[in-house]
Each structure stands twice: as structure tokens, then as C-alpha cells.
Length: 343
Image (tube, rainbow, N blue to C red; front, top):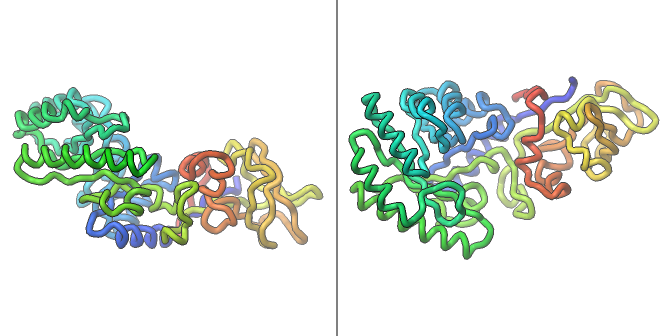
């Protein structure tokens, strides 16, 4: 395969700086789920740590353990899904914070910590109306009482939630629920827990949603929201470019060695503009393992074509808007078998 994902770590660092300047004084928790949005977990975590990122957010404990290995002992890591006792035990040993949105999980964490003579750091999740995991407001007081009863083995580090970002009114209502839950938690434990509610879009657009931490993934990788502000308005740039070499120049176009099985959506045929040595050309068709691009004079095997991303005419979100999806999904379609190259 002559296709590769070209990941520019300097652009990534610039995005991190832009995020830090925008959300201050809140801290940035870099979300690295799905292999750092397909960019490659290890290199991303190492560069982020070198740039001063202190917090990393992961979907599950195995990813959190990989972040610990790449980022070292100094970084703080939150895993917001726990599946079993093995997850809890490994998280305790690796000093990983656990996101807990269920009282049964909370009790299980307390039991495992007590049996092992350890103290778990937990972030309690309040359901602010999205119904995407989280403790219901009517059960919140009981959850806090359980934390207090197990205080020798549970440390309430944070209160957090997700919001729908569907409308300002819905988000404002969610914020009200969130603040009430955080205030009750503070009264219960006698100190203010870390509060984190916003992800990429809300953290940039609405300063009152930033609180102490913001969980930002997509913007760090330069993936803007569909139908929203431009990259220039946000001050971010796509970090990765999907590239492929020409394998054959034919009368009907040039063939590049990447196709639908590698993540280039066939529905982009006849719609996507790509970058070639002769300027922009149209992506004509996408087959299983190859694609055909409108040819140019002097095209030859080995020529570099920028298909998608930061150094191509179209970003992942541009493609997503053609497909009726989101930029993250376009990036995550790129096969892990496509090599990642870093600079």
C-alpha cells in the first residue's frame, strides 16, 4: 500500500495552544478515544504531554493504561467507562481517575478499593437531561451519601456531565442542573470538586460552560463541527492529511492505491476535490482498494495526491458535509492498516 496518513505534530501543538488560550483559566482535558481519533495514541499523547497537557480523557480503562504508558506518571487520566472488577483493579494500580455514572458501579469501585487497601479517585456524572449515562437528579443525594459512607476508599475528585448541544435553551437547562449537582457535592464533601461539562463546540462558543476543565478532542485534531464556524474562525487546522501515491496513469484518469476498504467513502465519487502536483482535481471514482482521480499532463507513478485533510482542498468536515455525517466519522473510517507518518 502506498497510501498513508500524514500527521503534522506541529499543527497539533498549535491547536493545543489555541485551545489553551481560548478556554483559560479552565484546563484542557485532551480526549484521546478511538486511538486519538485515528491519529495514533502514542505519538499524540507524548507530544501533548510535552506541550503541557496535564489531563487526558479516555473512553475505557485499556486506553487509559496505554495513555499512562505513553504519557508517564505525571499526567492525570480519566476513564469514563468501567466494565468489570478487572477494569477497576487496573485503574487503581495505575492511578487512573474513574468516571462513574451509576450507583452500582460506585459501590463496586468502593468495594474493590477497600479490599485492595486503596483509595479510588472518582468523577460522579450527573444526568443533566441527555440520558446518556449518568446519575439521575433524584438519585444524586443518595449517590453523594454513598461517597461519604465510603470516604476512606473513595475520593470525589470531580462532577461532570455531557450536554446535547442541540439548542442554547436545552444546554442552559442542563447547565442549571449541573451547577445544582456540583454545589450539592461541594456541600457534602466540604470542598469544591472539579467541574467539567463542555466538549469542543460549547467550550469555544460559551465561556459560562467552561468551569474548571473542558473535554476537547475534535478541535485538538483540527476537526471542526459541520455547519459551524470555519477553521479560520476557530483558529484551528486539521492535523492529518490522507495521502496516496499514483500507481498508474491511464487515459481515464490516474489510479491511486487507496479505496473504500481503506476508508475513502465511495459516495465521495464525483464530489470531492483532491490535491495533485498540477492543482485541484476531481475524485472520479472509488473502488474497494483503489480510486481514480481526474488526470493531468505529465502524471506518473509515484506522484503524491492529497486526498483529504489539512493539506488537501477538502477537510474531513468538508467531506462529512457532502455525506451527511460528522468529521470525526470520516477520520475514523480511515483504516488502521493505513500507516501513520509523523512530522
